Image 1 (cartoon, rainbow, N blue to C red):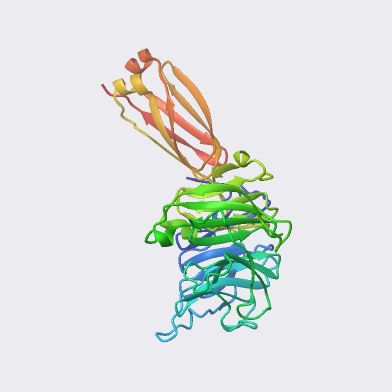
Image 2: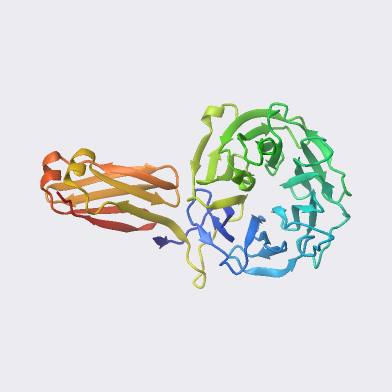
Length: 407
């Protein structure tokens, strides 16, 4: 069930659900589907003005407005022009620069992973000053508009540094080594993201390559540095689920670097980092339902929709309860209600019937499903013939159910 309410919000997270691009506020509200299945997309990112770039299933780079409307012609990549003799896979980690002028991505070409970039208004396969790109380096992450943090590919022939810096405009394989994470000797895979100032780094590390592509350990390791290129200092580690879906986790910092988002199988997580001096102070919550992947955080605001723009679905509220429970079950366990919300919220449950008038309020810190029990007095559970349940949450229509106990 969806409810519409116009709002103006600072910051936006774009993400993929299925093959479609969505956007939302960082607290999970205002979730809006921008594309409708005609083309399958992966790895969306957005510039500061809200312009979105994503890869389609053929490997083309497609630009669109914050409402999902196409902008210009698709930009081809090596995958678009691939042949049996010149094989290439569709790009991943598609990242548009904050000013919207450049698009960086990694791509496997003839079996080797590399990072490339192109102009956002390119006509055709145009790779300024590049033939091979930054071979063996993947997961580009913008630091400002002219520098990229890159991570060493797990299959790279040259071991090199785990993390490097590349200045856009320099030639092939010109990235400068930055640092290794000596505290993660167990890790074989790396996918790092930088804050836009380059002073915070989130390195998602895994051991999938040592476990037949099914990791036993995945962690988000957080570093701070005085400046890009300065020696990073390890601060904290956040454990992530060890699953083969980790490749779509896509860690991404808020524009001010104080928060970070990533995806797991239960939805998109957002953590407030604080100063990183006290790891126990990091606060994390899930802000979407499962199936949301590849988040990217942008300072673009989400304006109130115009009259001819589809309204924003601010919250999904669903409720399940047994409508014909046994009286003995009611006496022992009360009314069991499974409440599902698409974003963190506060719900109010009201249960009414002959001799029953009870209201319970619960703050749900995470999106997903929570079970709430409403206890009844033994005498009421034995005699009541009908109960009416009403569940409400701000931004969603109320959900009601009628419960008729049976012997």
